[in-house]
Length: 323
Image (cartoon, rainbow, N blue to C red; front, side):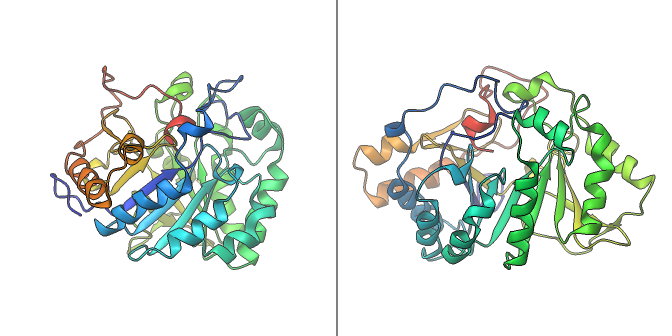
């Protein structure tokens, strides 16, 4: 489907829970957040209705997020149902990786195509400081098992903050020379707890890598997202840069989001959207649901305005919105 700005909207991020088994310092306060009541979170059946309508509008890629999506029971059956929907070409998941190893067989059987794992440090002490937990070894085992068992693409999402993991930039770049994974540096976004830390622009990260490695750009696009990818002379994978702040890519944005409580969010920054839970639980027909989603997508904002916060900005933490 094409929105009012001429962008092809084909990618839906579905947050299935606001619960998480970690407490990452830029994502969630130490004592956690006030959790959404279970009966206020959309059921898998309700989400399937939304995805079916979205697929009829041209959505072909689904990414399941959280919180931590693997913490929600029934996720593998949910993936299997999504894969059966006509028009859905790809289903992926973003996870912190803690529960990946124990769930990988069921995820593969359900038809999961891709996995993104969020890791912000390869040093156990720094990892524990960031996540307020232990388990880096478990996460790395999960990645290796996923690769060994044939997941066609595993990506590592890394957020660099000046005060925390700035010294590890080359460690992550070199990881792509040791493993067939894509490491994507994602600029810290000024949302919730993230406002407390100093963002490092991807331009600065690239300069640091270039001091030690030659970066060769990929001539053809890798995936349908906003990342720009490079390889080194020794790469088994790729180094990606997602730069929503320093190099705004809103004119190419192809995505919408569903929050855990069923709000159709048209832009990560803005509060604008539609309460689909209210629509679903008012016994709306499939045709009505289709029209509501269609009209909402048409009104997708042209761009975020992270640099000029205003009353319509979303001030929640990332785990509440859907990472």
